[in-house]
Image (cartoon, rainbow over the protein chains, first blue to last red):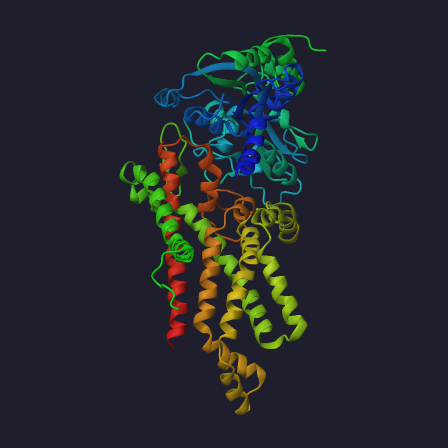
Length: 289
Length: 300
């Protein structure tokens, strides 16, 4: 029996002090936005080299996942590509959490089209008419283009699952008061959207600019009488791209200890250069190597 | 010399312990099923007695649980999605599995028979996410090429995948049902000069029809409950399908895609558990019917 207990205790003790020299290792749970997950992962890896005593466990799942984990108190830092709603903050307070918001970068929401789609300009109002329930645009011909490989001429709408921050931001910024059309293909990740658009001539989709690749087209987007702006990190930084959004991290209460130093590092020049390298806009102008 | 049969020695305690252990094992299924039902009901009840509107729930296609201004919870399109995918899956699976069962039970002999039985059971062991992957990366471009449709993540894709997934279990059960038909029936028919075809179609199949029915119903239950493969292959799109080339969204896939992201206790959380109650009741009825049908065969 004694031996059995020893066998049982050894891994537990090992788990409790995972550090190489036996010091306590802090693990920060970081979860949420699919848009931010690659950046969060890059931050966690880079920071691991700076302070090995701090481990950051990153997982995605969507902004809704991050926010509900924050409300349920199961994460230290929640990532979100939309701001928490007042009722969500209230729900978190009711559970004893006090969400504190940090803007950690900006992202241009790119519109993706199949490589063969000749459309190069889109107005926000047209987007609203394509995606919105009250909108009447359902065929490519109505936009004045014929898409090779898309015989039916139908616009295939690719969207995100309804708790994604990207979905919520798109609704707020593009559709306004309107709801999404029913019948959109709701993908479970930014990358899935790009993949589907890449293989589907009739499709249109939206996702963070960082998920763009050379196999899809990105039209410039025009808001009312403004110029038609191509999505890029630069146009997200100077706010000329009409559908760029802030990216958030939430901590429960003012962060202290390891979480504080981690958040400070993310907002430092070093952390901001990492988000810039990943294809997002940093929170302020800076020069990165 | 006489042993004391009433002595409470080690053997007596061992005997009791094993008896209790077996009893607990025996009733555990009941305990679990009641426990699960109570849990799902408890979580879903806040929605059922609160914001649920029966007419909207079953009559509307508008599933917008996260809308800020006006959340609506209509599951009509989700039910249509599940029903269409399961229906098509049965169109695929019934001929396949009954054919396979008839061949294995009535025609194949020796090594062929054993090899087929093992392979069919192996087919049942393929994880559903692998099936979903096949749907996403093989069937999707194939359907686009073959039928010249804009997108391959459709009822057809999910239905074929689900049919192939349900076929092995249906084959196994159908084969058992055919094997349960006494050989005396076959011998009698052959003695009357019936051909093999006539024996199978006019004697064995009618005699095994309850068991075959049960096999089909269990396949339907399997189709109803399958999640991952349907989520990946169906397109996950709220839509009442009018052709096999429409994308749909299934009840199970909706729960899988959304439950992880909802705050515990919210209306959205409650409605997903309500979907769970609904699914549970439907599969319960299907399985119960299958069971009663099989029982019918034994009482004959």
